[in-house]
Each structure stands twice: as structure tokens, then as C-alpha cells.
Image (cartoon, rainbow, N blue to C red; front, side, top):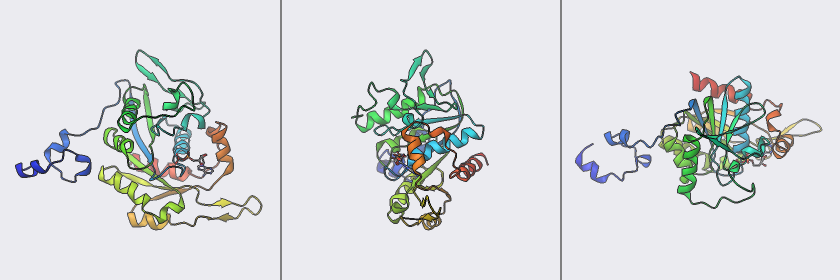
Length: 280
Ligand code: ADP
């Protein structure tokens, strides 16, 4: 890097496309804990909240577990954590001399979430961005995940402090963007895609949630919000990994903590595609 460019350097490699020598040394990637051997880390992101990012994260994690992999979920949605409830986990996180121990679901998926730390499950997390980002880093570093084939990270929505920290400090093998069809008319998916690209994260593809409803009587599919994911995926040159309908039984399983037992195959192909892309 020339002296001249050096003076222009803002010190923020994340928003700079220069491939200068200081970039390497300024990498903010943090190692995970010494007792961890995590083969692949997948971030699940969305441009905004409420599109089903946590449900998609949970479903992909369960499907990978059913393929025979050892799987964990790091719930980085610190202000809206929903992963423990989805899996019916009510216990508090424990700690031993090695670090913080994740909760383990019935089928053996490891989970860490701020909800496992709170005295009351309904206490709000009123923390500023840097504190929240610090907690995510702690979950990455101080939790004794052990051997995992896949760690899924349920990222907070948007493009603020915490998703930025996840992208900058945790070595992601890829990101899955979750959207609902009506978002596709806006720039939200593109924002999530551009953020990942700017951070040099490999975008594995899009999952379109709430794509359609199935009539309980005639079993016909209705795309009530329309659909534009094919177009956006094509425009961005990424895969449309899968589509998931609005399914009341899934929402009920989330609410009563039995989500792990879902029998639908909506995202089976998506999980297989992700596995292929990561392992190729
Ligand atoms: P996000 O993580 O994007 O904020 P969630 O996964 O928490 O979104 O989903 C928001 C709400 O919508 C939850 O109550 C969830 O159970 C419900 N939900 C999400 N996807 C579906 C779906 N495909 N069918 C039915 N309910 C869904």
C-alpha cells in the first residue's frame, strides 16, 4: 500500500474494497475456543425481522442433524432470541472449568442463546450494540461446543452492529438469506446480499419463507404475497435454495417447543444443496 493511500485509510477494512497489505493483519476474525472443533459455520441472515429466519435456521439445523451431522445453533438474535423456546428448552446455561456449556435438545443439537442466561425469559435485553456484539463473540469463543460438523448462526436482522460483528469476527463458510415474498419487491434482499458480499462472505442462496398457503380442503397452493424470488436470485446470480409455505402446524410446534419433530420436507432439498456447496 502506498504512503498516499495510507493517509486515506479509514481503518475500516469492512467497508473498503482495497486489497492492501494491512487488510490481512487487520482481520477481525476471532478463533473459537480451544476445546472446539467446528468444521463449518453457516450464517442465516435476513434484511428485516419477522420473515422466519429463526424458523429456517432451526429447520436447517434439524435436517442436518437428521443427515447424521453433529450440529449446533448459536442464537445471535440477542434482542429477540427464540431458539430455546422452539426446541422446548427451559433450563439455564451451565458453566464448568472449560467454559459455558450449551443446552442440548432431545435429538442432540447444541444451543446457546441469551435466553439461557436471563433470570426471567421475558426480561428485555436493553443493551447497546457493542455489548450485544460482545456477547455474540463470547458465544463463539467461550462456549464449549466441542466437535461440530455445522454451527448455524441465527443472525440478528438488518445490517447493524451485530450482523456486522458476526460477519467480521466469526469465520463463516457461507450465508443463507431468508426472505418472505413481499420483501422481494424491495431492496431488502439485495441489501443483505451486498453486505455479505462486501464482507467477502459466500452467499449460499435464498430461502423464500411464507411463499404460499395450502388450502386445507382442496390442497391447492395459493401464493398470497406473489413471488419474485426467482427473479431476484437470477439478478444476483445466486441459488433459490427452497420455498416454505405458511404452515400453521409449524408455528404451533414452535409455540409448544416440539419443532424438532416436524415431518415436512419443505427444506430438505435446501439442506442437501447447502451441504453439497459446503463440502464440494
Ligand atoms: P425472524 O427470526 O425472522 O424474526 P421467526 O422465525 O421468529 O422470524 O418467525 C416469526 C413468527 O412467524 C414466529 O411465530 C414463527 O413461528 C412464525 N413463522 C415463521 N415462518 C412460518 C411458516 N412458514 N409458517 C407458519 N409460521 C411461521
